[in-house]
Image 1: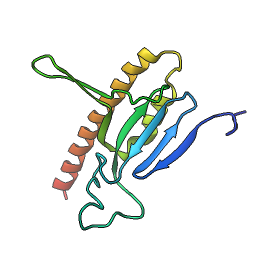
Image 2: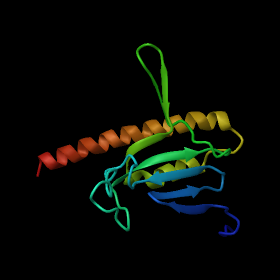
Image 3: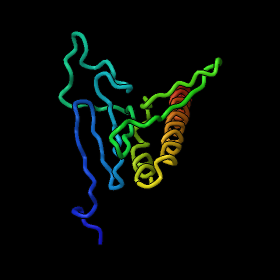
Image 4: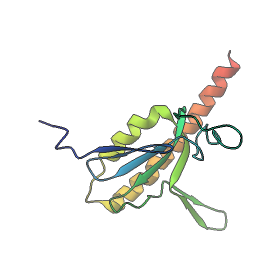
Amino acid sequence: MIHSDNVKAAVMTHRNGFQIKLPNGYRVSFSFGQGSYADNRYAGMGTTPAPDQWEASNFELGVFDLEDEMMDLVKEYDSDGTVRTDQVVGWVPAHLLRDILTRVAFWSKDDTEKNKERALALGKFCEKSRTEFEHLEVKYSENR
């Protein structure tokens, strides 16, 4: 029987969102407040006060490995061969939260190299889903 005392998962809040540490030791960060790569990135800046509670239809995603280091979620190659990486993916549709947690929850503790590949695949999944979702929003608004 699974009991919450046996599953060593934890939820932590931070100023602009929350993080979930999964039983396998990986930590997933969801940010959607001021300064994050989400629709309300500029909320509370300038003359507008920050809200008491953040709400957004998308979020910025980050994943921390077993050593508590942020993992690369994006890897791109410039035309001159320069490799660019990023440890966050922005404007990820909120409906993907469960899928992201499920994917990361099944990463093995013992295969860190494979998990680096999985993190890049997760980043591509989020970017592709964001693009598809943006197309659906445009199509919906055109048909109104």
